[in-house]
Image (cartoon, rainbow over all chains, first blue to last red; front, side, top):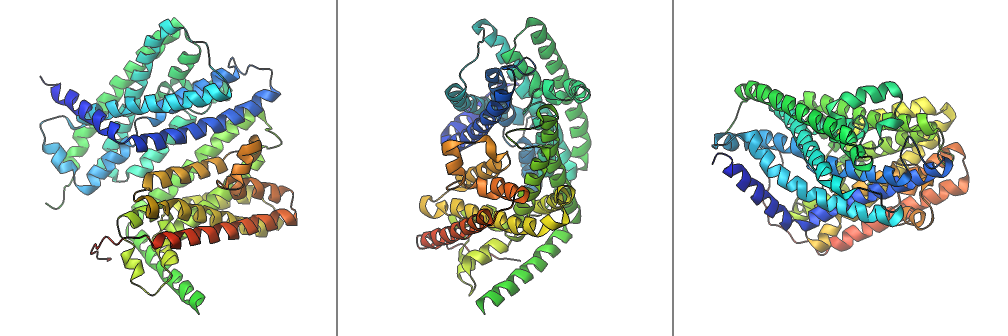
Length: 263
Length: 261
């Protein structure tokens, strides 16, 4: 009973987003362009190397990048949405409703995110197949990879929601969003697998939550092992629990300080 | 005479926009620092990349710093002084051009300059810092000239993309994606592309003229390269202005009453 409203909110958001196919397509085509650029970049790099770089063939490198890019870009502008609602005063209406504000945001966001993920991944896959070809994936492992991706998308949302809660205090969402995205791009291993990093930086990045959004799930996709699956899934769950705890603490703290003007 | 009036208007808008930015000092400082950090992260990425691979088709880390100096400085200049270049399509589709149409000023110029995006200041600071790291004193005049050319092409491309709103009604998302696309293309080593892609990058998506050719000119100057880049920028700007005014004939007023405070 308690969760029905969140399930309904997810369904409404999913259907709403199906209406905006053009927006989805524009976004997915942009991701397609980036994958095309990276395909060119890696082709040049691989032409001077021995065919395998740090365990990755060119196909693995491109499909790795396709997956990280699809995960990281799919949730859309979560932090900005928090910011807009705080700045416009819409938050006052939202907080009055009989639901948990953050959980409601998650339920409406996750359905949109999954839809966007499939759009982006499909368009990127066409480009990857056209320019470099496919990779060998054991079909039996796909449900487990899907679990890790779902957890990565949830962790990604949780970190953005945590930063979004800080907008109640900072009132500048764009800055936080910029910085978080760039952290995931680089430190999270979205653009380059951590194996390319200098060892000291790779070690730091590997334990931070950002790499559980991008690097670890994508590496599991191109180099599956059961050991890695359990390690990645459990660590993702642990980080999700930690961020939810932090959201609860800071949400209760900032909500008391939130000043709502006008009427 | 008209040029002097436009310059006066430009000066006045700069003053107004600076005082507006200083009104929200905290946000202004946060935005500037954020953009510097944002640009710095890209340099970190390329540093990691070139630490491992050192040279890509003749390009090194130094080329990339030069590229980012040019791109961020020219993009930042465009954003600070012609801030409405990113909002033109919504201004058109929401009927907000009425305000500019009713005044005896150059419509396109007035629309573009009437807003500043202060995230751009971070780009300007970052671009100048990077240029300071890699350029010799002798290279600075050429760098500044090439930055003006790059900024002109970026602004012209934004005008073209946002003018789609005249013909299709709503084009904000398309224009945003096109502008992100060209900036993204311009932020990678130009010579990783070949064949048809290079042709596209020197014509309809002129990212090659924004960073690729200018970086190569800074390393290995030749007059023909400079003149063709300059010529392309002038031609591209002319086309974008013509398309804007052609589209303006299709413009429908929203009859919206607004107050500008």
